[in-house]
Amino acid sequence: KGLHAGMPRTIRGGNTASSGFLAIYLALQFCERVHVYGFSLEECRSAGCSRDYHYFKGIADSPWLRAHPSHSFELEGMALKAMHVLGIACLFPNPSLTGVCGGRMGGLLDKDGNWKTRQDLVVGLRHLGLSTAGTIRETVNEFKKQHAKER
Image (tube, rainbow, N blue to C red; front, side):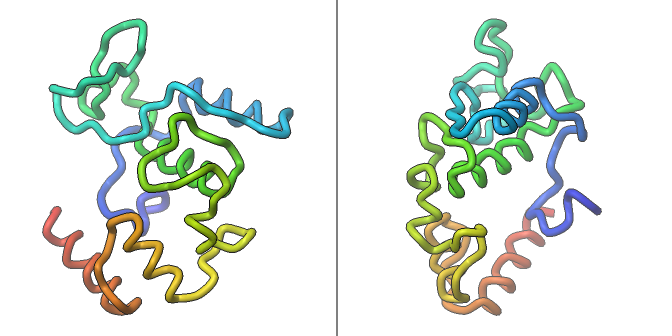
């Protein structure tokens, strides 16, 4: 379990950070503001992807076609999106559905990155397109149903 606990599906890749992700981590140690360019954060699940894994090699961006299976680019993308929402590192162009850098999902998250209220959680999930449920219990049940269908 560990890393995969609570995830809607198993994340592909290993547990070694990519050199790009390590560079971001290093920059965060020394710089007050970090702006990140060139990461493809949207999933690409087929061989017909339009963007490259390496801009200079022409290798398709897909979990199944990656040159380095030891990296978990999908998980890195999730972490980078979270950093963007909280204003820790700003991604360009803005990832879909996250809003402006440091926008905290339109103010739904507090300064520590937690949902302010249960209602904010539901609104945030709707904003991300993850749920149409009106209550937390319905949201959890809906998530379980979707997860069961994917298996």
